[in-house]
Length: 205
Image (cartoon, rainbow, N blue to C red):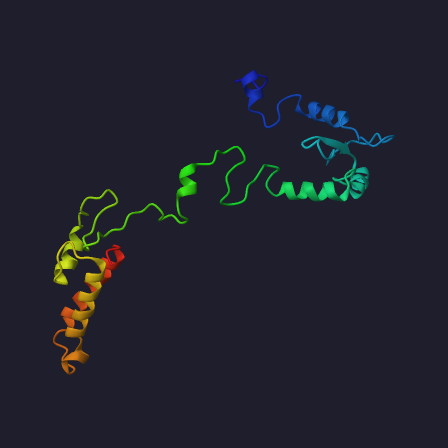
């Protein structure tokens, strides 16, 4: 492949004419300071409401420009404080937590509901102590929950109060202190405690 090929020219680190373009760009960016004809190699922001726009200065004049630069020039103290407060949220509107937006309609069911996430949650138990779901039907127990109830000698529809009373009675019955220090029922006691702990974690007592 010839060294003057267009393909070869494209893979150069700096294609032909790049140096000339750099010189032209440098010449075009002369210092923006009045009366200065030095290259403007240093960028400085134009100011408020002109974000993303810059002026090009030489080193001496960019230092002088930055020394006297004031983003809030032309604003009084109240306007500066307001700007700084709005800048915290990116100048976007905000509302207090737990309040509705100004254009959001008021829902009547919110007014009727009592405070708290559980306002409309039905109890797990009926008046006679049977467990129910929020839909009103009998709650289907999981396999480990059924086993835990069997270990405590309780029926599947036992209430939370019934489970707690049974647990306390079994602990008193099998605790070594209640059997003159006899530790032969320790395994049974451990099973009772684990079963009750599982039922409690499942929210059944």
